[in-house]
Length: 150
Image (cartoon, rainbow, N blue to C red; front, side):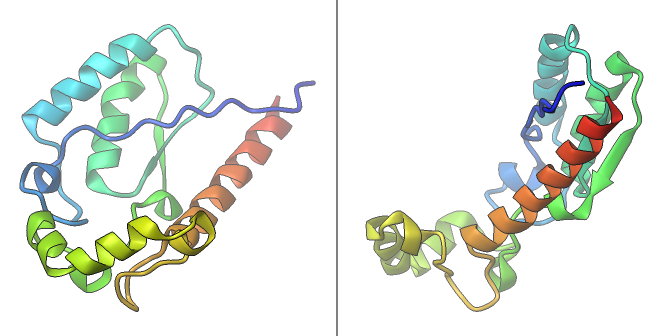
């Protein structure tokens, strides 16, 4: 029996929010994003997957659903795999946010790792540490489940 589980992490294709330089937002893939994932799917076609999971965000589900038919798998979604919660920055233009918070971005870039992962642009912004905690916990749960199933 194997005591390990291989997990492939795939970023979604270009979304409408990416194209418009907007923070967060649960938007669909653009036609370019769909093509990006189709190309990736071709590269992944020869790999055996036991399961296919995605964030519950539309762009992630759409990306996984493009890959799924080549593996004859249904897509299972996890809310905990969603991207960072941006708080009041959600939906704002990235370029404008950077200009407005330029000093905070510069400050963050000078912090040592232990401080940088705790850094928040605002009280309602999810830090790297908070994001990694929920994400890694979920990946561990998935790995434990699929390691036991083998």
